[in-house]
Amino acid sequence: MVIGSLALLLQPRLRGAMERRGKSLPTALVLTIGALVAVYNGYFGAGSGILMIAVLMLTSEPSLVRANAIKNVVLVTADILPAILFALSAHLVWWAMWPLLVGSWIGGLIGPSVARVVNPNVLRVAIAVCGFVLAAALLLGWM
Image 1 (cartoon, rainbow, N blue to C red):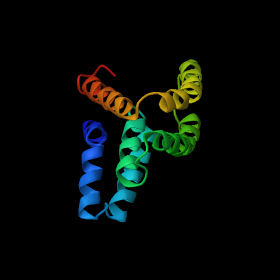
Image 2: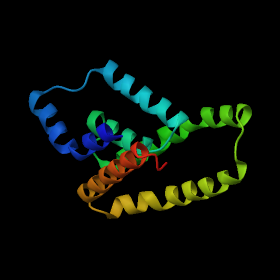
Image 3: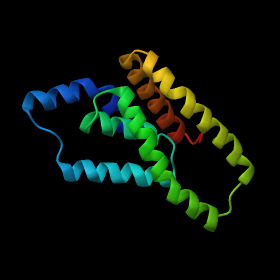
């Protein structure tokens, strides 16, 4: 989480350095990082959106608004199989599903509108700060 938040925070500098050198990340590395984020998202999920935005902005989509939209589609797709597997094989607290479902749905409706209005640099920094707070909460056992 800390690495993803740092990558997101430093994205303009990292992308600028890659462009000046005329280099991009190796495809195998990008695919490996993307697969790791998808697996992390399927099992744990907390902060995977931050990680996916960082990966997208450093590899293929410099626009935060478009990276956010792509992230939404990728992570929903990556959530389908784990959700089915957990529903079939694990003891779930089904009542907890409803607040998550409603919160995800409302966030999915409101998020893109906010992302289009807020300055991308301010939004990028705010997302990175949320990632650092989440990392601290995970480290301290608050979640």
